[in-house]
Length: 554
Image (cartoon, rainbow, N blue to C red; front, side, top):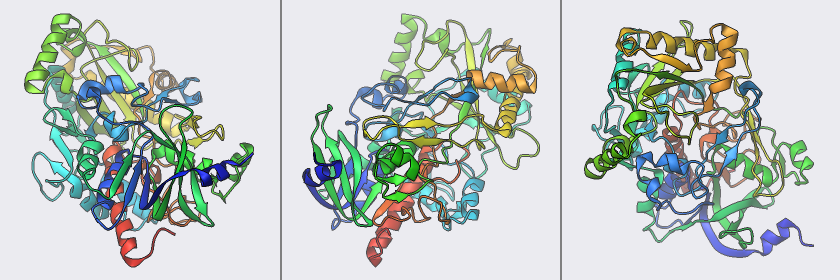
């Protein structure tokens, strides 16, 4: 019986390309656009999912329908988490053109200057705040116009939100009364304060990486985009990555095909997909690979390690005398009014990002920069995907921005279609549990201020019975969930144990780079989608510079 390697070698070829990009998510769309700008270079972009032509990929509220739907989402779940009282969490990851940018919360955030300065201090030359700011500005199309911090005219549209809620204004005033400064821009290096998120939308429609970067580039004859093309393993010629084998089509019997990369193959499969594909290809922890009968091409223990994510604690309060989406959408008449407003104005609840009001705060006086992020919503529900509660209420979700906990992504089977084991290890350190308790206490202090107290808020998640440090940490484990920001599993660094170097070249393999959120050595202090755009912008310029000098990934 021929081996999988033999099968890949004899599979139908789709041709040779200068660059083969695996994954058409946020980073892949940016790379496809930038690398195909040179008409002398051919680019192949492979996406396991389908096209982003479903209406719910365009209407902002559609994220409610996309997450969990197989036409949009890989459908991952975590392993049972000890820090969450043994619960497993759904772990949505985009499986469609645009990737997570087609199903996420559309929030435009960069993190803090200190995040990137820390990367540089770890030895990642060229990744400090002053270094990366031009790459943020390069692709940005900021609705309020360009300045020293923002760009205009680029592919990545950033707008203010198209709705206001009295309950959110009340929370904002309460946060100010509790000591937070007011701000109208969280993207200038210091994000401390309370204000409204900026969003990746245009005129009330979602603006994904596919919409902004990929669609315009698809008109170029040197760019080939293949959907329903799931990569199974990388191909090698000695120490060099030469291409990729993939199934093309729907169903288990889809034919195996292969593509060859003349210059470089670029993994852009995200913090779950990139380490998983490397492991399937024999690049990863040797003992793990041997356990699954995979020949070890390169023993790289860091592949799949260092997983970091933002865990949110959903604090929810009933209120009286102020409307929320819970009751506004409870009747057919209310739903009709919401739909009509969106149809006429592209505003109202259907234009909503999942979260509208933001606050960045410190968990204690010993913290140098904000380590808590609030996502405040004029609604409550029991769990994501379930109906809204039948009473007026709001949610103040708060997450620890720089968790100490580290997890992993590891294959469970040599079958490429089998999902890997995702184990974030949430709340596994005493420091993380202490910050979780502090976050709940701060939320209670904000809600107790006069602007909200007048609406008689009644805490029902986690609930007032949780009071002591130990009880609050336990409460966090009972109600917390991910906000879908996995990073770090192909860590960038100058040290031999890192998976990629500061040029994002995979150590020990020629012709191979990883370009996505997995390369972050530490998670950014905010949502991770736009930092991924920046990473891809910077990587594209590094790849093009290497091509000019003849120094391809090595």
